[in-house]
Image 1: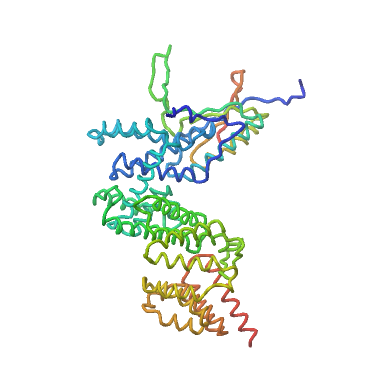
Image 2: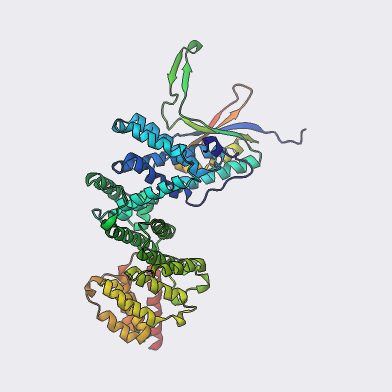
Length: 438
Length: 128
């Protein structure tokens, strides 16, 4: 057993323990999960407030004494003390008080937060329960992602707003509504079992996928926050995969697809923030270790005979990662994966991506035909990438004026600066070429 | 020895118990790390002599022979002192310059600089 003084302060001079990057954010997510288990999920806000207060306490004292030897343990202990104070003070816990106090005290007597597997399991279970609650089918998509980011990942409303290009007030409102819904609909704080598990698990995977996509989209000024979303989605997915309830082939496929795409993150833009296309990216800067991890999960996803859309998307990402240069990309393989993917998902966005693969296999004309053949193409009419793709294909056919027209429309449809810059350059190149040709 | 520059002690008082409540965990970690680095640098330069946080718990004793004791000394938490650092600085200007580097300034903390002096009547305060 560890006494609180073991986690005492180090003096400010000399050796300073460095805080792990994002430690506070990640500890916040863990502590909210554990406290929610104690307070009940209907008091989610209370758990969040206690954790915030614990972090502020750290801010009030650590500057003078330096970082404690075990910062996570310090935060846990402080959150626990604050929670106990609150439970003793608040009327709403009067009935449950002895029980809650006993549980909370157990929390530190039995185990120290840093090295006990028991506590570790408790945290992970709490995390997963909260994950299942946030992703409950009764919650709508936008509530799921926002609530997961706030409670599980420790992002503030302002940070979420930056990532979603929304106002802070709008995000705060969504959060309030989501918490209210959890209370009113009595959404359970549990890891589902039996037949329910598979369905509920799909909901969680879908949310993690959305979280990842939100981060992966071309970035605006807040690119750092966006990249963080991707890492958080991966972290939560790994947590889920470690648990017997979550260890399924399709989650490994999801993890693989996220890792394989994230591995290319550093090369997606140049130092000025300009978008670089796949063929322009410096492949030597792709994160090899992450690709290896991605491939490992892809291998694990092949257990059993299940094929999900995550499998296919991971397969496509793997094709790109495996190619040593753009020219040696296995486009026929990518196209065959897209051909199967469109069977799963009739989203016109998937079909548009398939058209790019078609163009790479059978040439730009075939690509344009594939775009024209997209069912429900009307849904894409305000999607900037539709016109960007058509523009690129027309350039390849030397139809520069048509290409320029497409780029002009595309430009009007995106608000993101880096995308605007990229499209302006493409447009300019077309116009210059046209002028020369005259 | 007269080669030693003349320095005085200054007290930096940090006012404001309540940091911006809306700081995200990431921001809290960030401002704290900067504060620790700042304090550490001052200590290594021999400028910071001591520093402590102060809690909100306390009592005010006033009146003749201290017959009046009031719980919670702080009229307003915005005004209350969250902690202090004792500085060794050459001039008030230098102390103020150091105070202005305080990483808490952007987040609702204000700093008061006071000369610590044996001779009563010479002390004065500057707020940044």
